[in-house]
Length: 497
Image 1 (cartoon, rainbow, N blue to C red):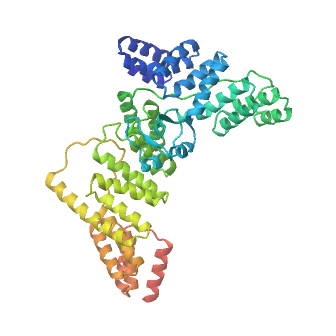
Image 2 (image 1 turned 90 degrees about the horizontal axis):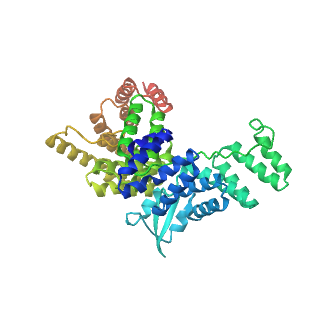
Image 3 (image 1 turned 30 degrees about the vertical axis):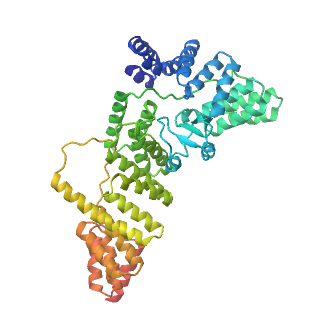
């Protein structure tokens, strides 16, 4: 079955089938049922429709909350020209699966639980509000179980197209037109969609509209009419999680990163999502990479998923903290400061001596104008880093550590805290207190240019020209940039000579 998964992802469908069927011969029932949707998908790709239908019907009976096999089954029925049966499956998906944020409105007055039975908090809902393909399974009149990956989001456009085609065959003009335009908007193959739209308009004697659609794809279209295309390029997620396959993809992605190929690593991690979309590891690593490449909305989506599936992998304390830290930074970047506060506060619930948690909490308080709270948290950050260093010196560093994230983000929290305190005091014209903080920062990182510039500016304010020139020269020597701010200071100091 492991080999079958690899062959399926590589699109070697005959080999995938051979391995799955061998695996089923030796597997207990609970393992057999997990590959029925895989076999149904593979047979559908090979256009062995009756075999596909057989496995997909069995899969749905065991996992009714998984709507992906229903979609494959609908496509199989379309290929067999069993339009009413296809329509039933597509309508069931349409009535139960949410493809936009409307599920958030429906959920606002309900108690939500995860499949594990754990109640979902408002903070968790805020993180995953952009999820698509969500199913709210009724547990009681006021309680729903939320299934995040009930339908593969990548198949949304194909779903609209299939539904549009079926409705067209049933003679439901307005509904078909609506679904086909939805498919177009969601990014499904323009040529296929517009040909079906043209055919729909032709059937209803709307020649002008049909011609309008054909003109938009005229360079790709032979003389009309042509056999209407029906390819249905769809995506499939494997089940159950294949740990060996995941490890292999993860290793390849890490090698891409070592070469500096971030896009290649992202592509591989996205491929790993097809192997296990519920993996904390893959979702977190994708979130980190998208954050580092400034694709903040994507980072938010994957980090929210990582926190949702936090208990799915063997995740230790450090990894939990790192994920909350990333989510907090994402919210901070989006200026959702109250949400950021909750994430950084969650870190301190896990580890009250976490220096980065206190520093980030201080930064959010500063952004909200809570200067007293900011000052307190930055002071705590400095103290906590000192305690952590002392404990490290006493215990020593372990020889090995489990790596789950791409990067271990090491920062001098005390340095950042002193710099932040210095800026806060400078904003309040408390130059003596600011100078004291920047002096501490320079002691911690003597090769870091920015504190020298701040000390030069403070010295100029205090009328100490020689001191200001010393700090300015040091700033430039260490590679500080000659910004407009720096040029202005240079000009001011020259006038004083």
